[in-house]
Image (cartoon, rainbow, N blue to C red; front, side, top):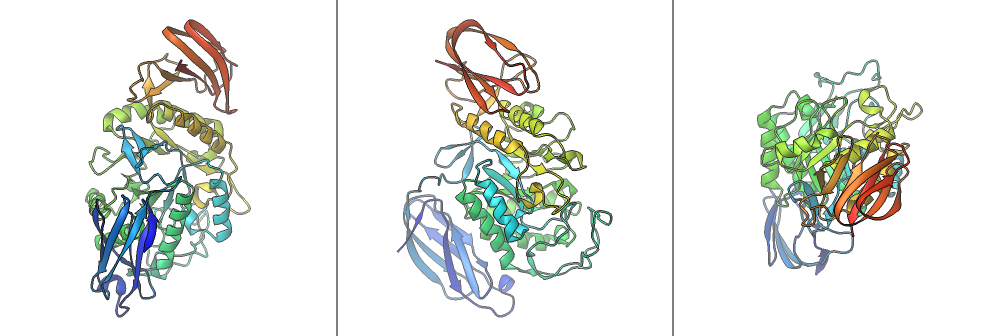
Length: 501
């Protein structure tokens, strides 16, 4: 009898019919029954006459399964689910309203990055990306199922999602580039026949991230397109969504991002996005996290199907500083997935310093939210930018983001919220933790440069630490009570942590 860990993937694979179009002509579903759950999922055709169904068990013990449909003979069997090993904490869920926790109750503090098209790159670039991820900078990555057409993204991907022929892009360059392509007539796709190899590439990425403890924030749709995938009919869209869910939903580290910059997909209406969301809620039995990301106009994040607010900045100067307001407005976790990238390209969304990006991470964290990283340094030789392709990181922010994550993991409870403080500081205190009434505080000064700070703590003794968020040091400043002064170095990006003894 097969044995797998709880929250791992159990896969059924069986031969079936190949006449006609196996993607549309035959049905396949599977039901999994354990002592504590019964789950039915859609199966899918994986090419070469093979049909599959996948399942993620949420409990230990014995399971039975049946895969049936018009695809071929019914398949039955059983397997055993054993407790998870170290590092397997299950899917991420919303907890304490504004924060996240793995299903085994381990707190999850999101420090994400964006590599839109890393799944579509040559093997050499792919391996360099994994080598960077092995350094533990990030625990979430945003990336696309569809290939991307945009500046620094003119090469065709390694595979396409459908059977057919792409448009000739041999004359495409920075001068001939158009972001909003409306004529897709040069492409020849059969939107009823998926290319399984393309989706296997995405699954490989999901698994590689899972092995590194990284959540796969899958961008299912986006507007950066010269192939026609952004302009499919509603029927074609729904067919695609169901196939994606059938293939990917059983992986515990999956998050669903309905779109990157949904409001630039001009062919889609609000009813379309709500329909996609309904398909996810109906077809994903594991209730993975769900969000939708905007360019200009925020989606209505109060919609019940949205689990967390995936935001892009709307203002050039203020963005993460609104985290408090958006928490109040929507009552959900705030995740700043795009707040400009560390880099030096000519676009305003991709040329801030590492110091400024790290400051934005800290501001978001102290206010009870979470921020995301990206990197866009000019690469005149290879034109490989982390933000899209992956490859190698060149910036100064990743190590500092990892340092912030270490600080976050030391927070009592499940996360921070903004506490009371002076006008020139942002104070983070535990959010909803029973001992939050003055037992733990982080005073962050951002680009301020105080040479000292006075505190007044009439009750108890407090351990004081000086945190240099850029040099990544924590200095013990002793135990104090009453009114006391903390000497600071008079430089930017400092913080003081106070913990009641």
